[in-house]
Image (cartoon, rainbow, N blue to C red):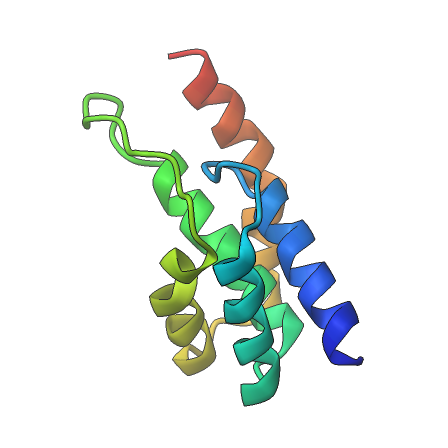
Length: 109
């Protein structure tokens, strides 16, 4: 996959991730391009966004609300965690399946 396609797919995924502002800015594009230059697999980035969104959505109901994520760089540490982790694809598939339920539960609070 060339750099332009990689960046487009990363930014599309970022914009669609629950908890983000839904807008990609120039620094987000630069961060995505840097991920491509490092050879970070697109799947790892997608898994990191799902993991972070899942963690945010499954916080205790009485926890203070979190601010909207306004930068793709917010996910940098989670991307590194996913790269270092040995969780299999089934775990991330499970998170993707549960994400809509957690999002609905949060909205109903």
